[in-house]
Amino acid sequence: MLRTIVFLFATGMSLAPQNSPAQPAPQLTLGSMDVHWNEGAPDCSKTSQPPLQVHPYNAQTFILRENPCATAEAPFMYLLVGSARALLVDTGDVADAAQMPLATTVIGILPRINGETIPLLILHTHGHLDHRSGDAQFKSLPNVEIVRTDLDHVRKYFGFADWPNGVAQIDLGNRIVDAIPTPGHYPSEVSYYDRDTGMFFSGDFFLPGRLIIEDSSADLASAKRVAGFIQDRPVSYVLGGHIELGSDGGYLEIGSHYHPREHVLQLTKQDLLALPGIVSTFNGFYSQSGMFVMYNQSRILEGIGLTFLLCLLACILGLRRLLRRRKKTN
Ligand SMILES: [Zn+2]
Ligand SMILES: [Zn+2]
Image (tube, rainbow, N blue to C red; front, top):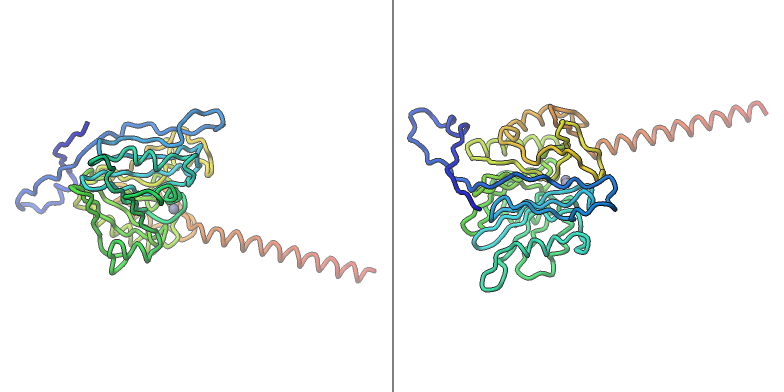
């Protein structure tokens, strides 16, 4: 059941200048984060877990997660329902509807007006395939708008004239969602803030897991802009695209279909406010700050490639020397 209560935020209140007139306390529509995400399995052929898990946070807000057995990425998606239309943030890692009933599930959740489901807008946090492969399932459906993830389309759709500066608004009907550019992990990444629930959707820009940073200066600038944005706003939960941490703070194995004892999905406003400090310690290659491992995947791959080439060169030179010695001794 929907519970709307007055939500007082100590942080926000304490930031108000002394002797200033009392500000109206922000009202958030709250819900339940009491959920256990399915773990996948050591042997996926022996599990009866469904490919898609849906957690109704409240009557208008749904958190969806692809099962680790369906995809080791096990990404999260978010469905926000307004009075005029609904917004789906990300479409996951699986294109095939027979394996992943994403579109039928989402359309099944949408309210109907005069027998027709309300329009659905599909936006993405970013363009990596594990966040947009499900687009294919929606392409032929009526009343669905899908916004592409390349920077050109993102800028034009939201009207960002001075990317990555500025904040755009999406009106779902009595529900406004702010779109905030957060490049760094991905050049056209966007995070979303739902004014109704206070949820901040941070994709792979910020999550309980590995922070893959491809552009350090862009990422740090994004972290600072986001910290400025949320400073005086109520944030109930910061929700990313994956869980890669265990409840003990250790990291889950990359590529594993079994995610036992995961860290909770939600991070806090304080965690997000601390992000500029975390990213500022990144050495541009691989480093760790607190529970967050940060690395630049492209540079690591380049490093591996360079090491391989150097080893190959050393082998060729060694072989040439050996052949020359043999020639001399013959
Ligand atoms: Zn990504
Ligand atoms: Zn991802």
